[in-house]
Image (cartoon, rainbow, N blue to C red; front, top):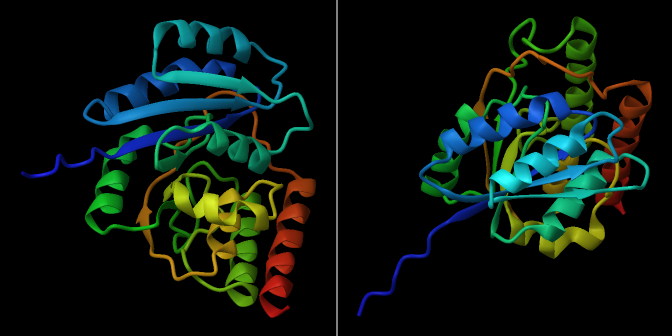
Length: 240
């Protein structure tokens, strides 16, 4: 008697801060693009000061695949993601931003690569070989290239865009390594990849990031310094 093939399902963890104006459009696009898949959406709100909670309550009533949690502590993207991982039901996790720069139209392609190649991570990567990237100011573009270059020197290359916030991975990787995570800051992908001691399979899908339509970017000098500290933290952790 043949065993019934297990259906892959996906927990989509979306950390947000003051993204109320984007939420309804984002959920609609995810639902449209993942119509053939089993999934849940988990919003982790870092205590937004806009109308995000109003939209979250409205969407929760409309969709049974959606849930949300409010973090009252100091805003932190990595901690928000970790909170979402702990609340997730499924074995595969998708992380994406709530500002619509990560286009849900890429989700089916990411999932196909993830399944067909039996990977641990699929990263939706920006093409830094171009002179500029839509959605990034020249200042952010240059800063990102410098940080990635530093990553490659001190930590190694497993993806062309370790700064991406749009990716799929196997939850078991988090479960095995959660006590070793740096666990704060704005680059949870790098934390998950570089904390893993075992050989992991990572592949990139080069995508075009959308321009931000509404709300403001969270990138600032403090965030950049935190990323630099994280890079050197991982470098010395590898040595010692």
